[in-house]
Figure 1 (cartoon, one colour):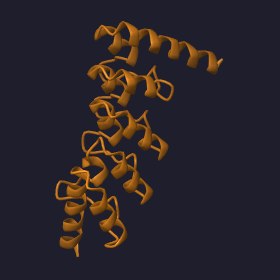
Figure 2 (cartoon, helix red, strand yellow):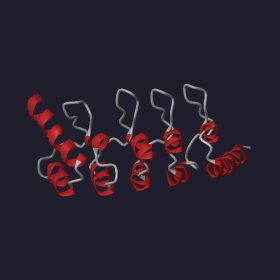
Figure 3 (cartoon, helix red, strand yellow):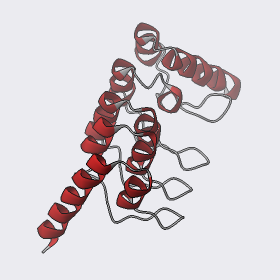
Figure 4 (cartoon, helix red, strand yellow):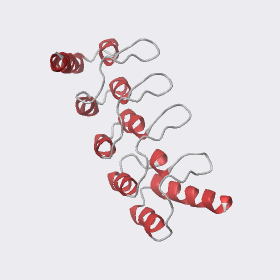
Length: 170
């Protein structure tokens, strides 16, 4: 039983990584493979899926995949989507309950990764949902990272968002 479950996880993960929507659907619906079945590396299909494939993300999440699953480094699919700049995939993840305020093992939130990689559209999407006061293990907030990366437009947008969130708390 364990062997076949590992094979099912491996096959589902492989199909998701290649963005094969029909194959993922067949495994979920016909073979009844649970979307959180892990592959031989202990990772789920959502963790290894082709990040630009919102169809695969939707399919896995609609079938009950855990949007907040984390690997050993604390990296969740939202971290991966933010780091790689796939804002549409990130929107789907958030729609299905992915937290954008869960840090990885370095204390980084998805917004920290998006800023470091210069993904302005992702940062703009994440800013209203993110805890902009959160510090990573180096003590840096999202604003600190934007300042250090010399992204003045991004920094101004984050400062406005931060001020707006402070006013809401008052």
